[in-house]
Image 1: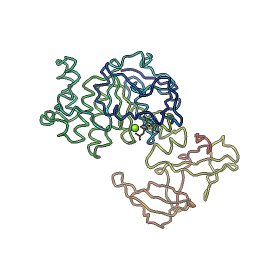
Image 2: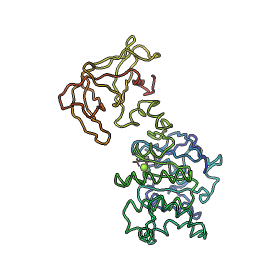
Image 3: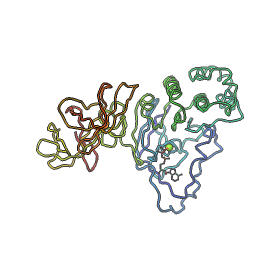
Image 4: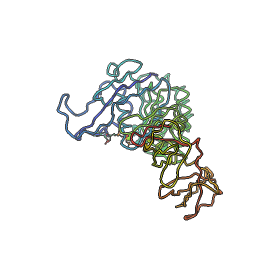
Length: 389
Ligand SMILES: Nc1ncnc2c1ncn2[C@@H]1O[C@H](COP(=O)(O)OP(=O)(O)OP(=O)(O)O)[C@@H](O)[C@H]1O
Ligand SMILES: [Mg+2]
């Protein structure tokens, strides 16, 4: 269960570089197969083609021993590339990756003990699910290890049902296949588990079930894991810490609470939290922040006169009353599971989302009066995006 450290890792892709799709679909066993070595498809030292995109940009990150670190970020920001670089499937252009202080290239791929699960299932179609799960132990001639660990895993994953275990993958549903794929990886006692949106093909109920099962198993076996997802709920449920990524860089790493309460910049503030934080552009004049249509007097110290500043407030922190900032309603959505109403209003033409009580009357054209409690306000420098209060 290693601690993994990435220091100043950069990776550029050339336009001609073959996509890693073939590798993505590769069953995990190949990661343990010493006969396979990674080949980028481009000769060493060959002239770098122009117009290369920077998928990882001087990225530094520590994944602690035994923790589940979730990576959240917009599509194309480099999450899959990050996983491949951590696994050693892609060689970075610069920077260093170590497993417990040992450079990754000094560890044979077979000894890295990496399990990977992707969005697309990678099972051996000709084998029964039971064999898929026990595959690694069987090929390593350790059949005595199979029963206990596999019994536990299939029980927690809910695939203990005899009929499921004796069926071949093409006859299993997507959700069943994915659970078998996860179980197969776990059965091989990985030291490091890499997940790339493993549950995104599953329906809502199955997602929650599988998430809970995965959570139990990751905690039980304390496997160092990196979990890429687009689903914030999943990240919050599974991860000890969450890394927010943007254009090849890690913007912030922390617990869900830390990211929610203390985002370091406007990007994290908007990206983490659903619906996103409202941001309004304004300027500092005297002791006030002045924006379009409203101003806020209680500002933090340290803001410069005339400074362009984003004011941020989360939809759930806005209060409704008889007085306050006038905001006509554009439309509203009922969020039944959370017993709230999401109201999309405008303040002098600027969109403002409010999470209001279910009882709130909010028809298009109704006028709401909003109050922004000073303790829930955030300020971000307009140029750098950095949080300044
Ligand atoms: N083999 C490749 N050749 C060229 N460009 C690539 C290659 N693989 C990834 N890229 C580019 O690198 C960037 C990061 O891609 P990556 O797949 O890591 O993003 P991602 O965060 O996983 O996105 P998504 O959330 O859509 O899966 C993108 O701009 C992508 O187009
Ligand atoms: Mg990806």
